[in-house]
Image (cartoon, rainbow, N blue to C red; front, side, top):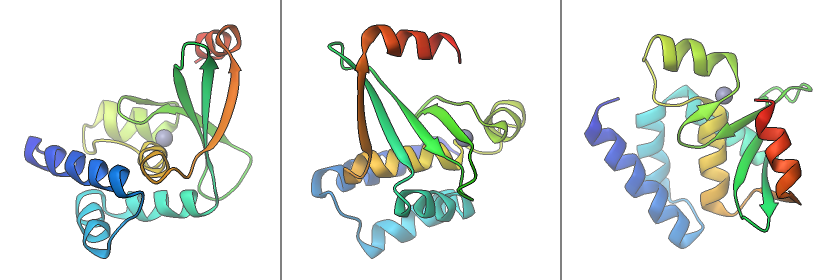
Length: 133
Ligand SMILES: [Zn+2]
């Protein structure tokens, strides 16, 4: 993904955040940029598969995103920089073919729409959770 596409994506995400809704035009831009992964991400969001786990009182947070097929797996991820899934390491880190995986896209989309399930934990619990990644 080239730098201009990244900027376009950022702009679209911010627009969605400000209106808390997605227009058809925004959908087609995101689909153009992220392809099949975006479709998969929308299915995850439709199933309310994104949790935002935040530490009190720091406000630091991480997303926990379910697998697309609703199997038991869930992945911890940061929308911009990290996901614990296999595809993140294989397609993104190793091969550099994509900018992010479907879980990261789902996290970003759900956060922009306000469609995450919010889970509060203590900062200590959050630290423990992060230490296991
Ligand atoms: Zn992932």
